[in-house]
Length: 232
Image (cartoon, rainbow, N blue to C red; front, side, top):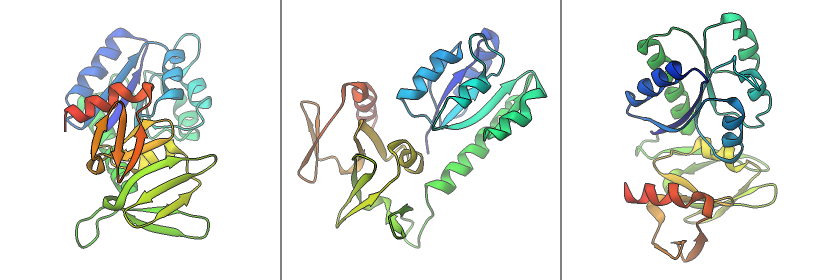
């Protein structure tokens, strides 16, 4: 499972250290490194990542203020030279707290905990080793095999999940369901669409064909989508 992450750290040496640590973990994919919280906040309001490495004491706005302004949070690992913010961090659902100077081993421990938690949330293995997730519908939680998902369409206030044999409606957000889907199997290609990479039949003129349905690739998602396609 690939874990996407960003760094928000205003100290150049600390940011460089974090970037080098991230590069040593094969399943981490760094999507950006920001030297101020405002730029990081703007990024997080338009893009989804699994994990945020966040400093606390920064100019303009602090790491705590950034977390208070996020409606949907990724996993957050605080990296700070001060232990004073630990309690406030945990009140804001921070996953781990790395006190500077921290070792690579301590960093790796935090990342492995995130990975384990993500895998647990992504689904369980059945007897045929086929991954599953539980989708909350209006009346029940439905067990869905990931292999059966063709694509997901965002509607007003809910999602429509297209399976090989039926459709399911859920009130989850796009960001929320992305966190439960394996990133090596699914990708968001438009503000209203998530697709299963293995179900793509063809790509032409920025449209994806899946089971006869033409799905647009949004301008904002083009670069990331075509990079993924080239690496398959």
